[in-house]
Image (cartoon, rainbow, N blue to C red; front, side, top):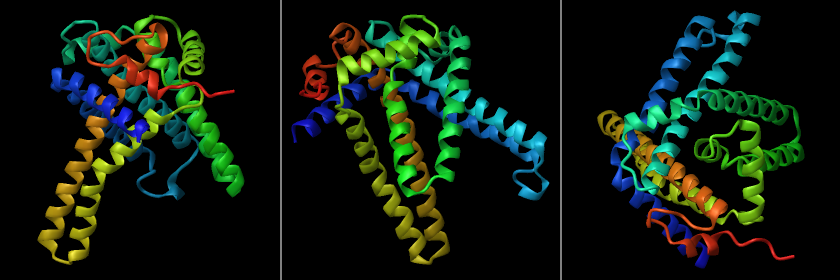
Amino acid sequence: MGRIATTIELAKASWSVLKADKELVALPVMSGIASVVVALTFLIPTGFLRGAESVGTLEYILLAALYLAMAFITIFFNTALVYAANERLSGGDPTIGSAISGASKHLPQIFVWAAISATVSVILKSLQERAGILGRIVIGIVGLAWTLITFLVIPVFVIENVGVREALSRSGNLFKKTWGENVAAQVGFGLLGFLASLPFILIAVGSLSSGTGALAAAGVVIAVVGLVAVSVILAALNAIFQTALYHYASSGSVPGGYFNNDNFAHAFVPRRR
């Protein structure tokens, strides 16, 4: 129960930062819209929406470019969120414009990190498709480890203004130093996201099983809007949490007065040996 309570307190602290800059939820929305536009731009001309028989070598090259473009968009807007969160924690008053401008200063790092992330994602997915059940479990664990070790890459290159190579090294060191093998907070955030999404999932299931056309359509619309809202808010909270965790991992405290440092100390206890 102590871990759960700590996670709730960290989520509440992240929410308090978001409330101070509510307009920043527009950044995940912009990321989603940009991703859809880019995906359609690539997929419609290449034939992926028309059927596999029309797909050739050029189309697969374009698909690889799509992976890179999608990763770039996601990381760019995550960088903007981290920049804004750091500005707020440092006593500033961020805006959407300042967040995007801040992310634009790190375009080289964003592009390199997008290329690395997209490549790792494709490799892991390809290996999982070819592996048996045990292999898929092992590859899933490798993917989880990669996610945890690289969790602070964006805050590192945003705040310390270093290259991706050094950011990867720093992120790994901060992970080992502060988290040990305890990932309770990330698991807790995932659980909170699931609980927040559950009512909308139930609405969608109930509406579709009702059999009434108008009622089903209304229920699905409500569910989709709700799930999108949960996804957008969680993306913003996650960026705020990343930024706060970076500060705690690197200096032992989080500026701004929004977070209780004791909560981080309780959440990220190194493994006993």
